[in-house]
Length: 149
Image 1 (cartoon, rainbow, N blue to C red):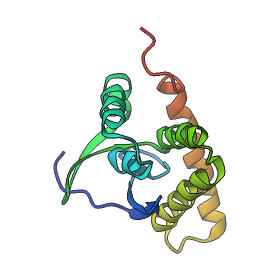
Image 2: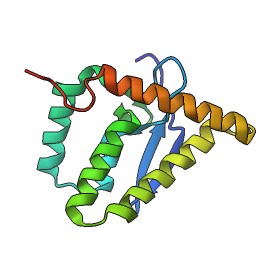
Image 3: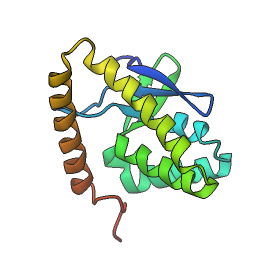
Image 4: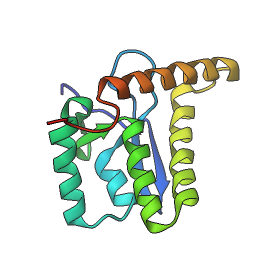
């Protein structure tokens, strides 16, 4: 960490702020989310949040990043991690569609911030590259299972 990082976009999920950041990786990637923000948006109890954060760092530490912001140190993670957590929580509370769509809308708004006034065809080509990179990142990371030990 060398300098302060500003959010690309601050969306809303369940009435709470969800910060999105530029991906800290080379190449084209979907915006990353603030992991603690997402847990707060999902109204997870503190003990569950602490356990998830511990597991995240133990199992996925090489696939997340810590950045300095004006609000403090923030752990950011790729979209595929958010999609998994949102889907799991939405399924448990019986709110699959609304919660998932609300997250996707916030992500899309962050994407628009990232691409700006880019022509639609160029934005779609960039989105395709970002999705391909996301899939490659998931495969490299073990495709969603953490450690295998």
